[in-house]
Length: 119
Image 1 (cartoon, rainbow, N blue to C red):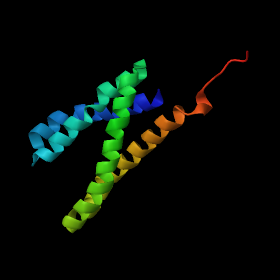
Image 2: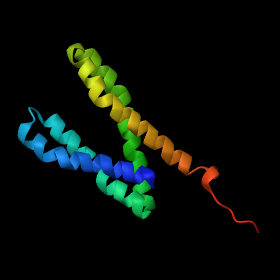
Image 3: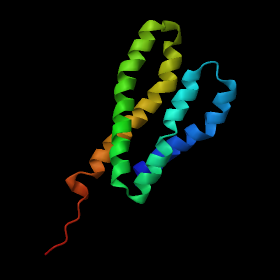
């Protein structure tokens, strides 16, 4: 359940800042990234209420974010070395949070948390 709350908070953050980026963004990349990030809000709420479908979609979302982050950050840093430090400071923590949330999802679904009553 804590994964759902954290994920919903990430989505709320994106929804909260979306109007600001509509007005002040110099390009559509920031707007689109916040629109994609806003998908985390309903998925996080779905996890909190116990939806199995939301859990599967959240895992897919997080895997895509991790894969694209691990590929995209080095490529963008290579293509635009002047923006490398800024990109790493902006995207690196989000990538770490996604990896941690994925780890928590898989850890919470492991056999350690299955309670089997004594027969």
